Image 1 (cartoon, one colour):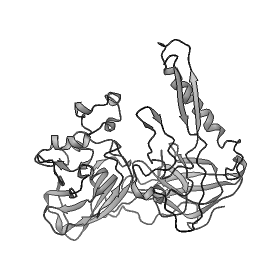
Image 2 (spheres, helix red, strand yellow):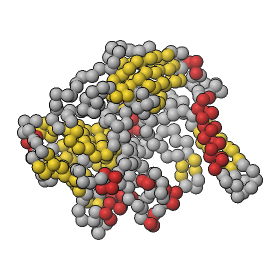
Image 3 (cartoon, rainbow, N blue to C red):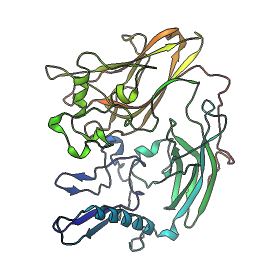
Image 4 (cartoon, rainbow, N blue to C red):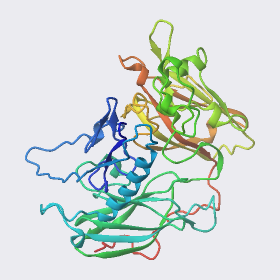
Length: 437
């Protein structure tokens, strides 16, 4: 500050980063330390630990990363905010320069040795609209071949991502040569899309994929829903921090979850009885705690928790099947058990088993790896009138029990299928198994 000097880390491309477009990495430590994290298991766990078989060849270019310094006059009291504005302008300049032309290694191909892919993605959900819905803001990317959603667990290959415009159109430029799958997901809809055909990128290629139509998981009409399907728990209730741990940087800040110790506030708010949410009355922004964690007891041990969702059904056809869609924003050594109208049912209707090592709760995050479960509920378990859905996370017996838990992204109960449903939608204007090159 005497004089004001800015130190900025600019990474023009995330092509070498692992885990897809939402993967979080550490960018700083107190000190201050500025981190250029190339490969990390933070917010993902062992799924993103690089594992090579004996004698398996592997290589990858990380970076380059640009360090930018700027300064103002010698006046120590001068407002330093122009340094930040200048750094953002410089970032855009560096993005336009990518891929840089100065690396001499043949492992870092220049622009004319890369390819480009473009197209349009739409969503078809007959319970939302009779017409296709533009994939506004969709995340669309090329990543190593795999199953739908596998990009979030890949750390060996390169990935190239962009956001679609309001009409669902997208363009991905400067893709390294190789074979990829095209993946996508659309905010506001659950699930992952993968175009079945492999996409072969060669030097100078320009590939127009055409119009693709994604049909998200859906069995019947929405009876009720909690949250927003955006792979984050940010819309739920995040409490004020313990005054002893408060970080002033995040007071009155959109990222309220960046405070230390928020998991302990659950026991303060629910010392004896767990969360109960009533459809039609409760508000998820006020009444749904952002993470289902363990409860700390007076003897400093922890216990699992069972949340309840209370809802009413006017009509129940006993021969039908309802569908419960649950997407999780993160999980850390947790198990989610589902029961209907009987909190002691053994076995439960459904269990995830033990999942996740994201450690998002401890590291002040709001999402990690994405999990989606589609659960059949026989109508015989439901009644006309009042019903209760029990969500149990029982694991609580380890030295790190305070951090066992999960965050919900979105929950939806669907009624039995009706005649308006549409099944088996294929990508439009494209043979589904035709390789692209």
